[in-house]
Image (cartoon, rainbow, N blue to C red; front, side, top):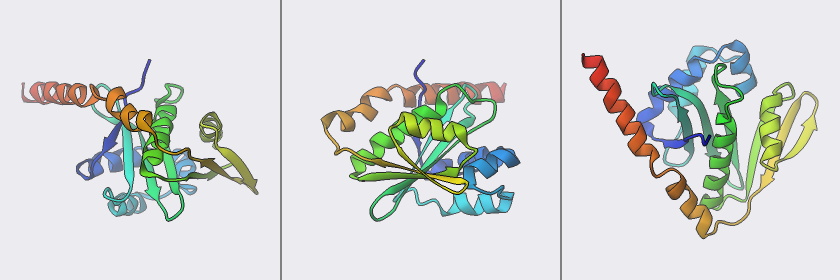
Length: 183
């Protein structure tokens, strides 16, 4: 089964915030390195620059954001973070987001991807290894690096071809949800 991912816009900032606020304390700690309180999550999401960075999501059938990724551009690399709701592990949403980020960063011309996480975040390290990231261990934390290849015709076309039906599917589900809400 292919997991549908799509890029989030600044108009979906609230959905991203709801997603992150729905993470329990342990998942927040694994995602941010510390168990952030609600206000800190609100502040984090409000600072995301959707013009410079990119955010991606996986939505369930009820249009709830169940997995999200943030790709933040730096001068010489891009840093990525991924979160998946506890009810969704093992469904490949994290892997789909990481693959999408990889292609997106390649198309941006980013030469290296960076991921920082706690040593007990085995799921994230597993995903990083599957993407070919080089893992560096320091104390109880891991850094993962991936040297990017250059963009090519297939990398530019892949997001368009692989996800061309997703906006229609999402819009159809949203229209059905709105119709149900009015009845």
